[in-house]
Length: 144
Image 1 (cartoon, one colour):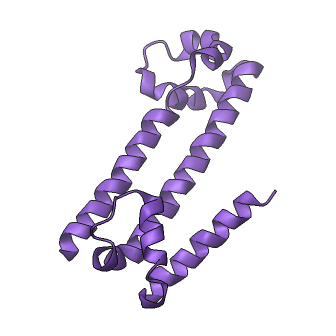
Image 2 (spheres, rainbow, N blue to C red):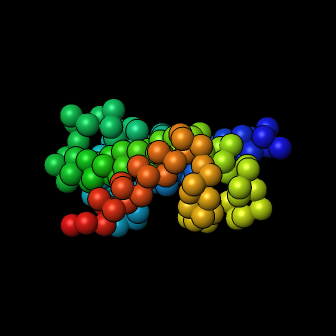
């Protein structure tokens, strides 16, 4: 059972990261117009999912409008990478506790956190610390 839980958490993290890569590499139609000329000039033969990486490689040659857009998208990508990294740390710290206490709950992060919270006094030290850090981080984000 322990092995299945570990496999499941690795698959979940990999799936979230893949969704991030797909989302992060695409520009919306309206925003892409800001870089349309630069894309045609520098990235015309690049696959759609790799356009942002191409623009980053040509950053010094881009128009001002496209540089602004590229910087904005880079910020979102960095934020998403950090969220995926934090989720992976959480899953690694709480993997055994999830298998022990929450094996029958939905695999959504909020449901798992609620389940683990209901076993607060029984959690391993690493999972208890990670739960506390996760809640503190959320509280900071909610506070303006």
